Amino acid sequence: MIRSPWPLSDLRIAVGRWELRLPDERELGEFARSVAGEYNASVPAQSKADDSPDERARRVMQDHWRTRSEWSPEFWKLDLFAFEDGRVLGQQRLIGEHFAVLGEVTTGSVLRPDRRGAGIGTAMRAAILHLAFEELGALWANTGAEPGNAASLGVTAKFGYEPNGHRRMNMHGTVLDTAIFRLSAQRWRDWAAAFDVEVTGLDGLHALFGAKALRPA
Image (spheres, rainbow, N blue to C red):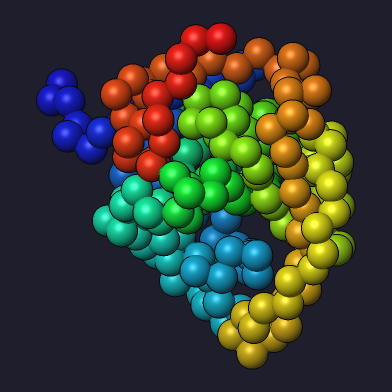
């Protein structure tokens, strides 16, 4: 098999019985179809309220391709997907803007409807926070959720995030009111021991994120 020239193709995060990595085209298409039946207002680039399921599936794929084509150390979006026994279950996004200066990241996720409530969202969040704090040296992590999104708010509460206000956004003519939460590196480490996370395939790639390689503690 020819190795992909994309530098993050070998990145893997293992957490519990799940693995996070980049998808191939078939896997991306499978996930896109699995979430195409519903409108996800929190990820506006992926769908519009009046899209057909086929249009939503295409938008999911285009949105993922865009994260790779527009990548730079000054602004990047990393989309890793959770897998179990080779089946794609969910998408976990990590965003860094001027990370070298600010040391901040933002997370967001989408799970396929038939796998919600199985602890996958918590595992994905633990995996991506480990990458941000322990591997890239982030100082803060931000996340948001609509007030009625009990599942997302529940995951956020598990990690000790602190409320950090609200953000109102215009989503295709509809106001989206999002509650914002903030987590420090220190508060993350108060919870980190509860999760067994292993990262591989990141050696030599820290500069892609505007981060410096961390020395072992």
